[in-house]
Length: 300
Image (tube, rainbow, N blue to C red; front, side, top):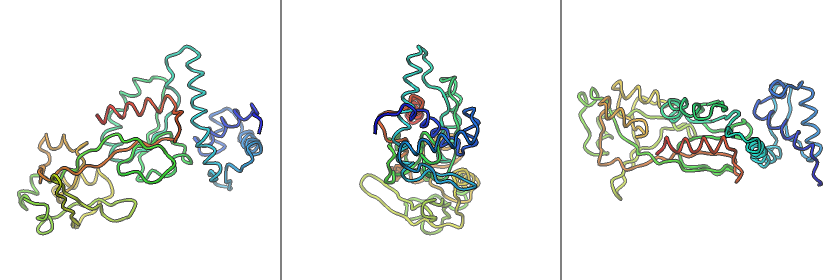
């Protein structure tokens, strides 16, 4: 197929629709009517030779072919914008809107408190920070980057390891006064209440594990309270409801301030990884590069 310069304008409309989530909102953002946006997408589908969107009366979604096409062209579109900004002689290459998908633990306790610093660094950039239980479809949902704990699942996305944080076992001083302090991981199996946190991918509690050198002790923790987010886990632990496993990334200050007691410190060598995900391409936009560099600083 010979190059058609009108493809660029159609791809720009496609990007706006994916980011906005509807033809109407994309039109508002671009100063176009909804029918004009719809016609532009239809022309792009005709030129490329695929159906990009599934359309219903209430919603639109990318087809499988449309998703693959968008994943391939979106980084190039961002790079064209970056090149145009650089050619204009401005240093503000990091600009526009950045949409970030993050889990609650990192979003609430690490990222959100430092976003003011990031925005001050790049005054022409705006950020939409979305906290979600699961990453979902980064492309179909219009996100530029995602930050998630846990090992990566098979995906077409590029995954970058940011850090590995230790898993700490903690309880309140009040809980320890009432139930005593365990001396070995196996002591948790009897006479103690553990605060469990639900794994969103399975619906079951996360398994506990204790590591000391090469010795590993798995534990099926039990307790009468299960939560589904870190805020509730922390609240229950601080309130004396039981023993909890917390990530050192956000729990180190609680330990140093003696708000919680670190238990089984000799068995705290298990780590949990934090990954950044973005579209798999060597052409990463300036705003995504800047954000990944900033998160890397937070993780250091």
